Length: 150
Figure: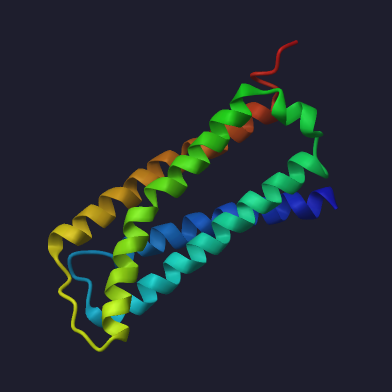
């Protein structure tokens, strides 16, 4: 059970990263209206992967793994959670923009894909990726007991 849950956790994080990078590659100044539904779907898949990573991580803390005491007593665990929360908060702005474009298309409108809106969304996505690079570092530190009071 522990190995399967660890695998699900790692796979979710890799998928989360893949979906975010895919969004970044698609959301460029050359973005076309017909690509907006794909962008919105990628963003939904990104959310699902993030929720799977969060759920599998919570199960690893409270059901399997090294036990809640190992994680909850380590300040590095809280840094990892704070990074994950920050990524989630930063992702709100691009998501709102993608949904705005998608809703306009669904309503039969022709939204204007403003270069400034695309640049702003990309900045947020780059920030998400930058923050995401520190999550595995926190996991590695935690796995080695760094941060635990001996």
